Image (tube, rainbow, N blue to C red; front, top):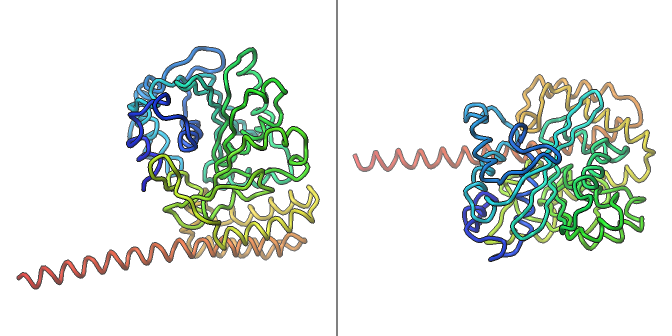
Length: 385
């Protein structure tokens, strides 16, 4: 078993002509949009370059010291780019039409890149959210509003593919997976007929109304959704299709990290179902959202994330290690919420801390095992002396 970096090492000598495109390839290309290709990949309609050349250019602009500053779960993306640039399977794929539109004043975070694979297909990779609190809030915002990135994704697909006859694959991780499906939903009939497959890797679903549309029914069979056992983001809103559940080396909410997903050969390691925490979250959120107006949902999401922000943490990794003061400040903020959202916020925060305790227990057990190994080593040395 291994992860996507291991897959590149194991299967990287096989071209797409020798071994056809599969869902792990789709995950890799979906994660490629996490790389900051500014000044590397040409923007819209300004040329293209191979992944091999893009990798060389990227690492000429960014030092190892600079890249080491990234503490988010997407920090693996540059290492993945380097591996792809040395791989027969991926190095000759072309990158083009890179766009990165982030404007806090307009509350937009949108990035995408076109990848022309050697089998004659086009893969449009939509960037997802990182593990910042702001990024997770954006995923939750999808429950009550059309975010600007959705409109941008639809427009991007239309512009990039205008007048072309290539077969199209769409994909993304987290919010990027949602955007891939949204872009297909908004596409005209000509584009829809050329869309071969759509990959949503642990991204939010859609409201019931969208899923009842004729356009959705016409693309449903093209959608593949993959989530980890403890999925949270991937179970927001209604699932567009029955998801494939995969094993992860992480625990709890940290399973959102795609590098932790396990695979063997060219197949994901499949689980029979999601776990109890994921199911409880899904049942809780589904019940609430069904009875909430869009305005109620907005108030709820704002209140929920105001509690997480009160901790002083910027991302989920920091939240899993929140100290006494941060925890106290979160409790104070929860008690300040007097509206109807208060009870719901407290329930979800409790679920979150169940996740944190799982992670902490794992770390403690790991350290205990390390301690036992060290004691055994010392005892063995003493015996020899």
